[in-house]
Image 1 (cartoon, helix red, strand yellow):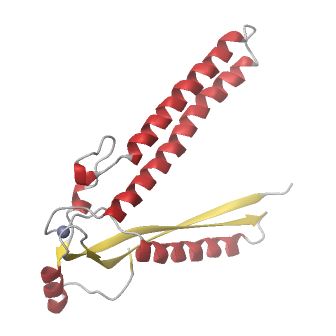
Image 2 (spheres, rainbow, N blue to C red):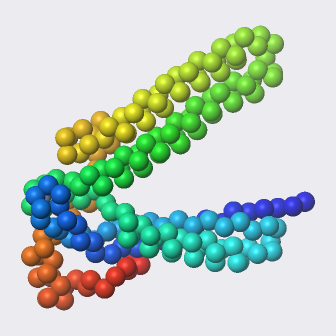
Image 3 (tube, protein in one colour):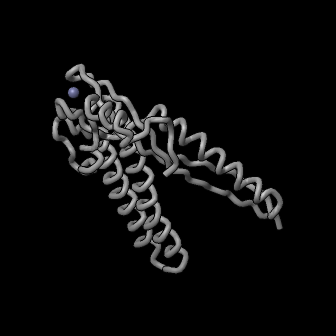
Length: 194
Ligand SMILES: [Zn+2]
């Protein structure tokens, strides 16, 4: 029998990020922490080691891409605001997580009722169950997805999710950052593995 396996790999890393502020025109620095993900498939046992290596390589590449292009929800230490790109990224992540989970939690009872329909004589009840759970799940998923899309921490519109307090306040002003680099307290020499 043919056996295929998917190998997934994660790599965590961080790098200092310079962030211009679009609200007050200043700039700030923070230690941007990201998680890279890679995936590769192997067939039977042949290629399983290679697949693991390929997944790890892909995770490293993804991590570097994320460190370069993605940031975290970190407030400007001068004016206290978040940047539009950070909010857009968080909205997208929240919305796609809401969709994935919502669909999974909707399909679960729908399949449950579908299976029970095979064993119950009065098919109307499982059918009704499928319809009701599908409808409720669909409405709940869409509502949470909509709430995720309207997430805006600058307007205090959190609704379903609050940014991590520690992350949100970890920015350094340019002065503090330059002082700490000069003192040797922090090193700014590119991505670091975590
Ligand atoms: Zn600012």
